[in-house]
Structure formats: C-alpha cells, structure tokens
Amino acid sequence: MKTTTPKSRTSAPAAPAAPARLPAPPDPKTAAALRLWVVLARAFSAVSARSQADIVRHELTPGEFAVLELLYHKGPQLLGEVQKRVLVSSGGITFLVDRLTTRGLVERRNCPTDRRARYAALTADGEKLLRKIFPHHAQAMVEAVSGLSAADQKVATALLKKLGLSAAEQGA
Image 1 (cartoon, rainbow, N blue to C red):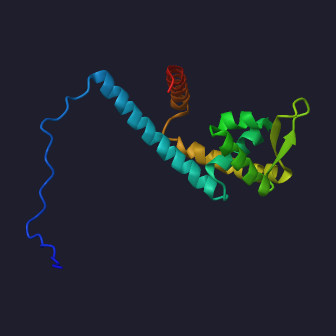
Image 2 (image 1 turned 90 degrees about the vertical axis):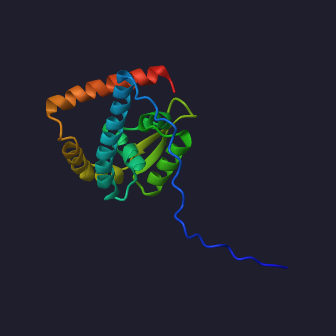
Image 3 (image 1 turned 135 degrees about the vertical axis):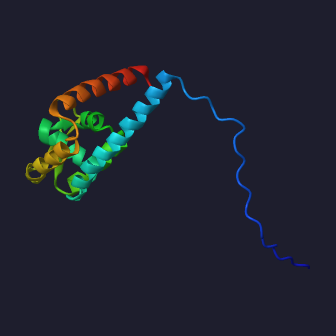
C-alpha cells in the first residue's frame, strides 16, 4: 500500500471573492429603523450589564432577582402571574421558584379559592434579603441611566413604552 504525504503550501491562501456588487443602501425610513434597533440594543446591553453586575454580587441570577423583586414590591403572586411579569416559560418559573424555595427565600402557598392555583411569596429571609440589597440595586440603576436627565428619562420611558406596545400589537 502506497502512502502519500500532503504537499506543503508555499503560496498564501487565496482571498475570498468579493461580492459582484454591494447592496443598495436602505431607504431613509429603513436606515432610521435599523439604526434605532442597534442603538436600543446597545443601550439595553449596557444598562443590563450594570444590573447583572449588581445582582451577581448577591449570588443571584437575573431571573431569581426578578422573581424576588416582584414579590418584594407586589406581595404574594400566583405563579402564572409571576411567569408573565418576569417573562419566562412555565418550566422556567418552576425552576426559579424551586431554587429560591431551596434557598429559603420564597415559599409556595395554596390558593384558598382554587386548588389548582399556587402562590409564590417571600419568606422572612427573602424579605430581609431584599430590604438589604434592593436600595443598592436601585442606586446602581439610577447611575446606569444617569446619562439622561430626569426629564429625558420620562420622555424615553414614554417613547419606549409606545414602541413596545406597537411592536407587540404587530405580533411575532
């Protein structure tokens, strides 16, 4: 049986072929929409990074913190309502509540009027933790959005809410 050795390349690899022609630039309306999306995504990423850096200091995931923060501010909630408000799947909310229950921060409670429904509620330890960490987290968020004045934050909030509602109406 004859074996061959691969030949060594002595020349540089060929450059990828350039496209025959570049696409036409988008119309102004499309260009503005694409630019808005990029700026919005980058702003969200930067503010989210500040939020997550604060949250992980307390050995929590963003999802766990979202559940705790909701229960801290709204009181006991039906699990389905927690799922909708923190934007996770039904399996995801079960996982998060299980983890927080194991840590002694959240408890499940039966619904007195519907045997199928269950509530999530902070335990005394969960309440104590949020009383301790939430003011620091709120300050981190104040700092994260401080690039806008209070008036600009109000305008941005209204515009982003309008944008989100409009996009939601259009469907996925």
